Amino acid sequence: MSIRIYGDTKSGNCLKVKWVACHLGLAFDWVEIDILKSESRTPQFMALNPAGQVPLVVLADGRPLAQSNAILIHLAEGSDLIPADAYDRARMLEWMFWEQYSHEPYVAVARFQMAYLGKPREDLDPKLVERGAAALQRLETQLVQTPYLVGDSLTLADVALVAYTRVAHEGGFDLSLYPAVQAWIGRVESGLGVS
Ligand SMILES: N[C@@H](CCC(=O)N[C@@H](CS)C(=O)NCC(=O)O)C(=O)O
Image (tube, rainbow, N blue to C red; front, side):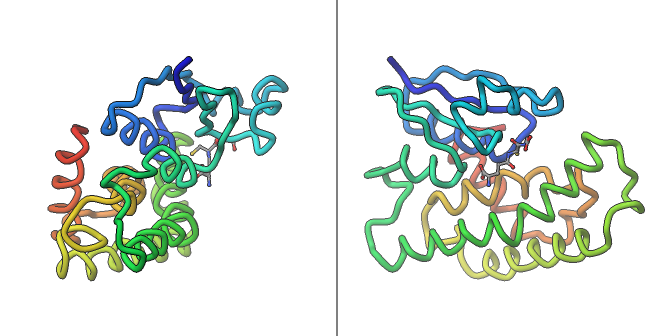
């Protein structure tokens, strides 16, 4: 049996899992779950993930695992997407925790409200816009110094953060203000084979 990935293709959290599985050549089946139709909240799905969210993977031996970044770490164990050096590995995790707490809640939520709920930009909570822009600026500050978030090569930190950064314009953010981020998006997409 291969891995089963339950995900919604609109979701960067889900796509990052798919990209890593593809990049590592892992065999998987993709099960599309439409969150706008509440398909992650059915009793059957909640039995697999009581949090009622995607992504969720069911491993080859039947064990489930949720939380996109936990899934990435599990799938990429032992690969070159995770630095061998302990400090670099911790830096990668620093970016991944930051992504979930200080980037995704603003950049992804602004995009979801505009692109999927049809909210006009001017109706977004100003705090969402301000903190999303601050997150993009933090990436810019790092990426003028290094080609990837942790040094010279692609790691899970880049995968986790590119997922919503590459579509930030759909949440009304102007990516041309962040040229180093734009160049990095191209590098990460080509490293992952994503277009
Ligand atoms: N921190 C979680 C976030 C998961 C999450 O927010 N999933 C959204 C899609 S991006 C979802 O399933 N929403 C549907 C719902 O909550 O009902 C992760 O990284 O996996």
